[in-house]
Every structure is written in structure tokens, then in C-alpha cells.
Length: 117
Image (cartoon, rainbow, N blue to C red; front, side, top):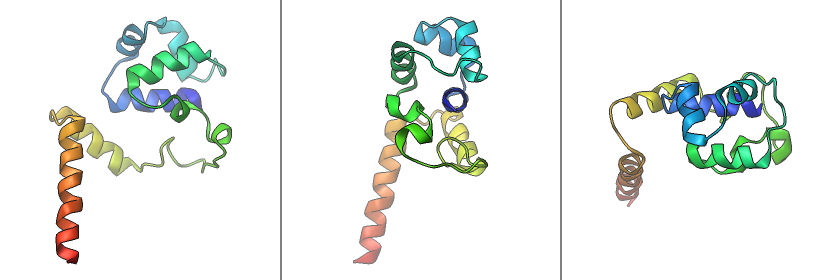
């Protein structure tokens, strides 16, 4: 499960395996083994590097069972359906950064609050 989470995050960013391995300072072959679930227990140091480069808390890389959660076998690691994943890909490809997206969400929250008043 760790490998699939890392692979999903990597692909959401549009990075190749080589790009993630270079950014994290991890051998490409080792990262490939993690993503293919051939290496089930990467070290804490490797997980720290990956979580920093992927900009997610390290706990998000851990299997649901390790976090006290249960998961559906059909769900992706973050519970996003394919439509949400595609929207995220399109946003990234169009050049929208995280801050712009956060501003959009804040605007939507403000707009809804104005409608409810």
C-alpha cells in the first residue's frame, strides 16, 4: 500500500520515477521496488525524504491499517474518485499552483456563507 500511495502522489504531480528519485535522493531502482510493493518496509529516513519532496505528512504514506483506518479495495489511497484525480491533473497541467487553488476554495466558502446569510 505504501508503494501505491507514493506512485499516486508522484503521478498527480506529473513526475516520472526518475524525477522523484532525483528530488528525494533515493535510488531509482529502490523507489521502483517500493512503488511495485516489492519493498514493503522502506526506512523512516526514506519515508521522510519522500514525504518532504511530495509535500505530504509522512503519515499519509502509511497503510490505512497503520493509521487505524479501513479501506475499500476499490478506492485509491486518498479516497478520490478518478474524476477528482483528473481535475487535479488538469489543474496542475494548466499551471494552477496550490496557493491559487486555496484562494479559490476560500472564495467559494465566502460565497456560500454570503448566500446563506
